[in-house]
Length: 300
Image (cartoon, rainbow, N blue to C red; front, side, top):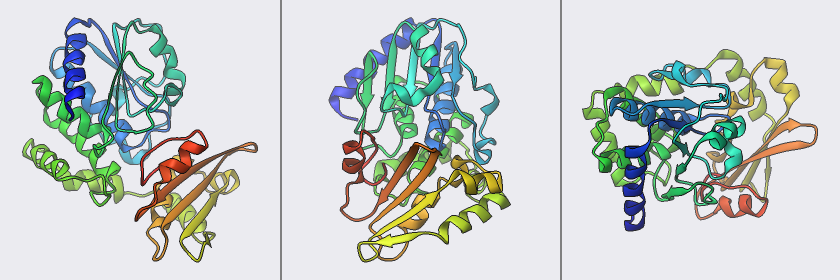
């Protein structure tokens, strides 16, 4: 963590010390880093005597419902007024969806994020684009603050790091990431069981719809670009959600010769969400930011 953000972390400590009540929120359409960092930080704050509530707009994918205390997350905003809100893994305020109401009811705000495209929407913004995940940032910050991290918090943080690094094979995996993983294992996490729950427990209908979508992948630029459309019709046919088929963009990136993969997700008749992945030297975040999106060099 760079020197400037060490100063910001010290400012965060002051904010935490004076806050009587704390809200923690992450982004809608939750993924592993969203849930792992949210629950991990929630555990850490509660274990260290902080009155804390967790909020999230969006259905939790079935393969993450095993995470410790997942049922403590509030799925709807309420009228509580919090001294401090901590926003995790969000590059802009729109990412928290309906939880903007909780944000607006809070007296001060802090963002902890690893997206280079973060627009600095909070009072205090701790942004570290070199980190593998927001979950890893939460762990590093907690250590710097002197907060204890129990097994439940470690389980959630490991899930965040595991998923945002693609099982530790993406280029955002550093030697420090692996040292942090070793520390989490030393705290007693069941790392193989976590991976099995997330990656080895796929619903049959999700598997079938993925196979259908994969069979319709198209290739461009002499095979360097792979594109997969995902329509509402095919999802409705199998009774699955967009979140259930998130991994397709990685799968079609891993085809031999492909440098960039693109998934076109139909949200409505007039709205399509685009997910990009790359390998090699292609920075897909620049493409995404050109169209008012965001993300990382290899995932946007």
